[in-house]
Image 1 (tube, helix red, strand yellow):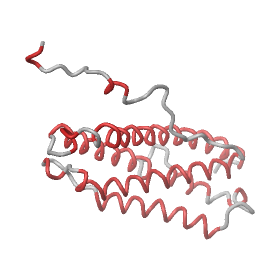
Image 2 (tube, helix red, strand yellow):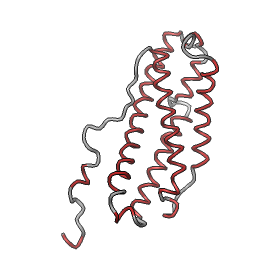
Image 3 (cartoon, one colour):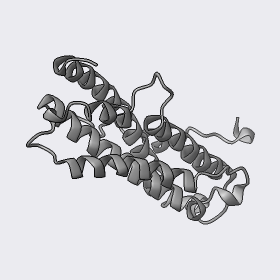
Image 4 (cartoon, one colour):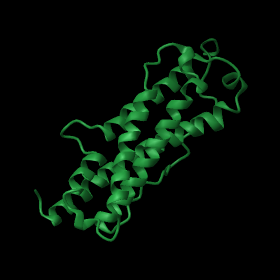
Length: 192
């Protein structure tokens, strides 16, 4: 067992790393939502019919995000995770004293366990095009959003509790991620 100071330093480093992973997840989610909202929804050719490319893109998004979120919630033994940090934190109750009660701490841990159960419940292989529509993927999107938001909230909270500092996990883009769609870059094969 580490001293309290050693635990704080290790937890600070691991929570920062988790914050980086979560910021990347949240940024990817933001780009995906912008694509659906700003490009697909305003394009009748994409929005009003079946499109194998969009079906594939949507399926890949859900599968990739599910894998990434589960890796943060149920990591391999050597990977960092918020549940792992909270398990270790339970050995240092004095760090929570006056900041977070035992009941709230237990509820946070149960919330993470429930997120795993909820994601696994909606996680099914989606190979056929009819299984990759927005309507079909709605429950997976909902559970992913809940899990990502929960992870972000808890990582920020426990970073503050352990380090008395703020962890920035806000989405930011250096450039417009959809700028590629503002010019005609896709040229039909016959026009070449």
